[in-house]
Image 1 (cartoon, helix red, strand yellow):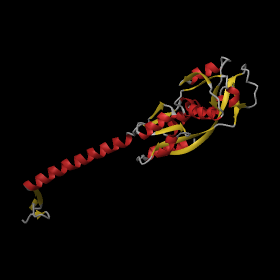
Image 2 (tube, rainbow, N blue to C red):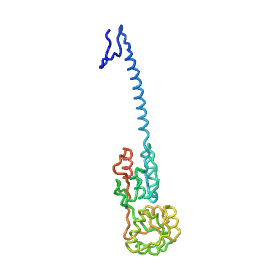
Image 3 (cartoon, rainbow, N blue to C red):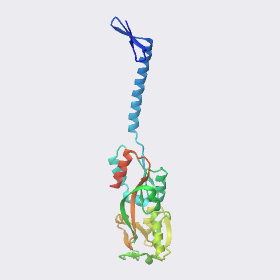
Image 4 (cartoon, helix red, strand yellow):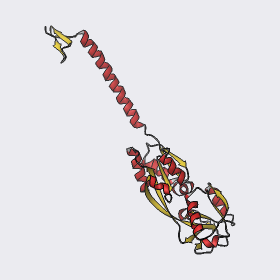
Amino acid sequence: MRSKRSKKNVNLFFRNNNKLTLTPEGELFYNSAEELLAHADSVESEFHELRKKITPIRIGIPPMLGTIYLPELYFSLKENFPEVEFRLYEFGSIKACDLVLEEKLDIAIVNAEQPSIDKCNSKIIDTEDLLFCVSSEHPLADQQTILLTMLANEPLILFNTDSVQVMTLTRQFKAVGVNPHILLNTSQITTLLNMVKSDRVGTFLYRSIVEAHPDIVGIPVMPSIEQRIGVIWKKGKYQNATTEKVIKFIENF
């Protein structure tokens, strides 16, 4: 009986009395095929596990903006993306921008009033104006508006000197010829709020923060000092579909 042949004329099996029997070459092919199929199943299983593992998304946010957006933003992200692990890091806007460029953060919410913002992809999501803030017992608490020239001799507590807010205020004070009396620069908003409540010092806070603290009086500054808030991510970096959806979610938050 003539045996069946492959395209390369290798005998895989032969028929004898209506019975197929593998040749040695057929045995080798059969065993190899079994190994390939088993390997394919293993690879498919690994792909399935890999799809289930989504890389954590690292998000940076400055302390003052964290006071506005957290914890609501975090819980909204977890509700809408339950399969994603979010890791939040507290950095000032300038540092957060640098870390996005270094790919040590995937996304950051920052004060957009900084030159480095142009190095990143960005979307403005909000605008906040800075108010001059004091306790209700402070001598300036009854003022309807504040000129920076009125603060020449007032003790102030501000965020650290590398914060975008302080850089903005420094330019504004310089423009009107005032050298502000700064008692303390801090990175801790709790320290700042407690000092203001002591009745002796003033500070500058976003309007949204003032609205959340009724025991602090927020006075509009003339001319107003507006700060754009933006979400940023690195230009030219591949973003997976999940990260793109998270960015879009934050844009519309």
